[in-house]
Image (cartoon, rainbow, N blue to C red; front, side, top):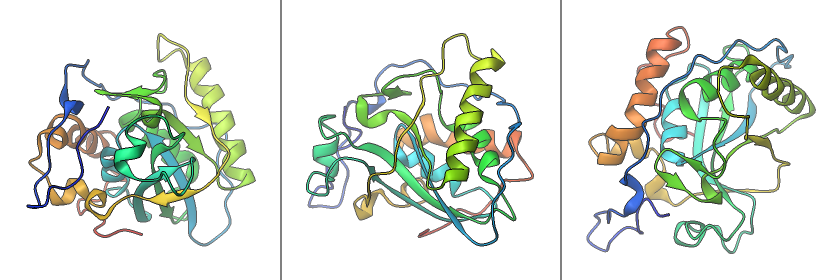
Length: 226
């Protein structure tokens, strides 16, 4: 299901069925990870898929220690990594965000906690919020052996926590390729703060980040990240 068609020649966006009826998302205080990430010094890369990439990028762009956030497509092929094609749900891509972060400020396990607290419902399969389709699946894409071990342990911890009434559906995906999305998708929340989708679905996620994790919240949006 498309959130939007491509940019119109006049520069406006065409609203599609993305804002259709859906249950409201509620933040959930995910537990601190028992398996703490042991990361070496220097910037690291991580990929998160959790529904519409606007909100994923928007939240991480407000997290201290995140130095880059790029919306794009994980998986699939380069030739079909285009929004209008990916939106068909037939390309094996997931809308995802590639971030760079400083583990001296925010560790990978802490990013996972933020992700599952305010970004994605881990019990939903091939959907988040009003968006339905395989391209909106929630997935963790480890970029190192340490990230893989931490993410696997954290998903097991979430499953045993009984915070959710349904089983955990989020999966680990082996990294294939990441393709940056079209320019108009980058920094979308910053550029379109009054857009209906943003105010309904994504701004509340940033507000939840500020409320639930004030020590990690950065007021300024990480503009032109990545």
